[in-house]
Amino acid sequence: MFGANSATNTDLNSAPLTGRLRSVRRLLVGMSAALSMVLLLGVGTAVAAPTHAGGGWGRASTTTPAAKGSFGIYLPAHNLTQGDIALQFALSQVGKPYLYGGAGPNAYDCSGLAMVAWSKAGVSLDHYTGSQVHEGIPVARTALQPGDLVFFGTANNVYHVGLYVSGDQGGLMVDAPHTGAFVRVEQIWWSDYYTAVRPGS
Image 1 (cartoon, rainbow, N blue to C red):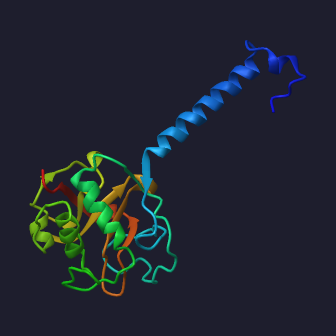
Image 2: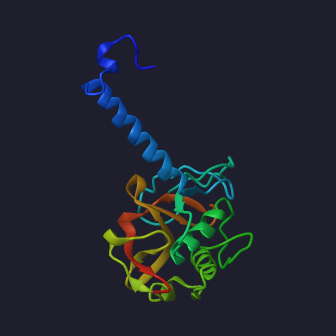
Image 3: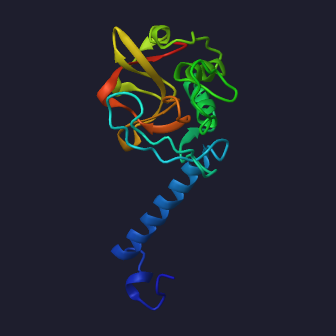
């Protein structure tokens, strides 16, 4: 495989062989780390994260997600935080329709999804964004963790909430956006971002 007839490949002190050994060692370490994580598989519907143009409701696609599969989002296999548990549930609801006042199991509004997701982690929340924004400790935008609630609007009008997923693609959340849409993973609406809280803390 390394060219047994080449002196440079059989010399243990040679730079080419040393480089290859380092590459193999890095690969093995990476494979070992990957085995310690679990990938959330098709408990819901796989979706790409559409860009939200900002400015509130109805800007992103309302097409029903079609393909079952992997979310491509990793959670630790052990020692799940309450946020991990809440996020795992919310992701499992991807593809279900938005319904004003909905709190599952077949449809949700934004605060209903947040309320039910965090109930799976043993935390009670009101079914109202204006209350949920006060039901946890404030979290800086730079310190967001999976499952944190991200809110949109202003101090006088908190009109939407989602669950923070990760910093990928500029920041992702799972939410139930608006009538005619479905629970989905999408980019955080930074133009309308107000604050974030971590329930149960």
